[in-house]
Amino acid sequence: MPTPASAHESDSQLTPLARPLNLRETVLEQLRTAIVIGRLKEGEVVSAPVLGQALGVSATPVREAMMDLAREGLVETIKNKGFRITSMSEKDLDDLAQIRLLLEPPAIRLVAGQLPETAIPDLTRLADACLRAAEREDLEEYLRDDREFHALALSFIGNPQLVDLATSLRARTRLYGIGLLAREGRLADSAREHHRLIDLLASGDGEGAERLLREHISHARSIWATGGSGPGPESESPTEPPTET
Image (cartoon, one colour):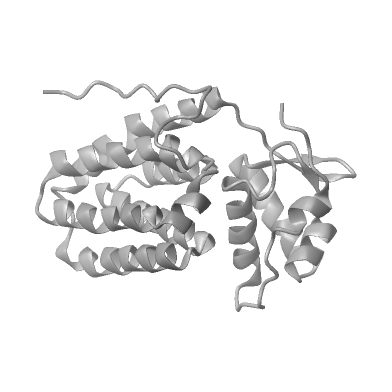
């Protein structure tokens, strides 16, 4: 069980924000990323005023963002105290990865036959943004653009409930090794997979698109989760569903 750290220890790792046009969304993205990559520790109890002070904003947008994150399952509310960062076991993360493997790769295979040519510029724009963010080591922007890219790609099967579920599972995945990958330049290599996926979808290669996304999700559970070359010491690779021949 993770030992909760003091709020001040974690808050010191958060970067004060310049005031954007959409403050709430920017606060939400920074806090979501802080949880996903481990800047805010599992089991830690934090308050909106303390986090707001660390971010250089009032408590109100922080509280609103934390309520959104509670609905996503990343935090839980603690009466009269604030919010606790949700803990996830290796089994929890394996289960998330297995659900994603069952859901996303077969869905993206269907997109290969339905992707309109007019969608390619928007997908390319997001893929380019992911690559630039990876090269700058801007993890907040990378994770946001990555989430938007995959949601847009999946949207062309015409099932918004599937897109919402896939996006929710992606947002809940913990990626504690992603900072190391960015510093070593390996995140940029992963970012280039978005352009490969566009090419596969545009050419109608559903099998290739499914295979690429299956590899991408497996990396998110192993290399991205730890920064190493495989699953963590207490985890086995998530069981992949059988592929039809």
